[in-house]
Length: 314
Image (tube, rainbow, N blue to C red; front, side):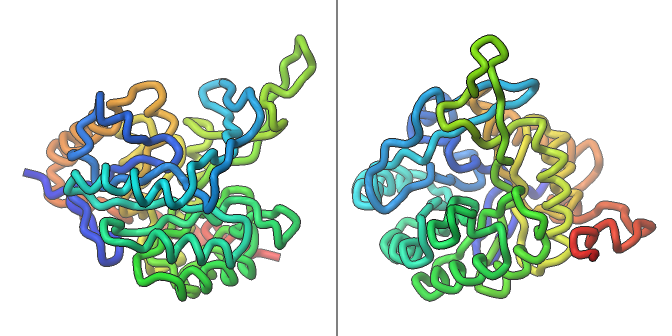
């Protein structure tokens, strides 16, 4: 038997596969055995009810998807009263994803959802920050530090900082999140993108631009996961473009401790369980007894340091 257990800070997961926030809901319990996942990551919640962005909210691009959902939410109170009890029926760690427009609002939500039944909080600092003219917190080290420090003071639960690919300071932001109290990094969110209908000449999304996810994002997110794993001491959770077991293995070799599967679930709702079986088979055929033996095993000894730290070069 292969040992698939993985540790993310103080949490021990039965296996490294979990959903990416925004692609997972209670409805999947009808087609997917939720007991088999390493963790449950909820759809992002906000303080108050919100309807989300104008339609159309999703469009296909070659091999991938753009979305501009806008984080529709029923609010924190509804989440505490209805969603948490649902997931408490499973012996699987529950990770709550939260979003806010300011550091203070982030801290308030963080404190509110720090209740029994919640194992960790994923903080979507890739979302717009109204205090910085709409730029995401994770765009800069300074704003990352400001929000993470307030979050850390608001809860004793493990905090997972979800980073953005829309920055040229990946390593600096990762280090800032770690130093300000993050227990793990989720790398990464979607990449700001756009698509236009050549017949109507209108953007294909009602909000003009949206986030690129799916296979097209994977090389970018994989690069970020590798850079972060080389730079920080806390675990990195790889996220972006995972649809095959080979994708998962790449992230693990690059240094990720676990992975999140998102867009692929829209194509095959049972994909995470399928990938779990394939990952176990891969490790068996490679005579790898423990998942931890694979993590960070990339053979990069001959690569120059500048490859990892190229973003910090003048």
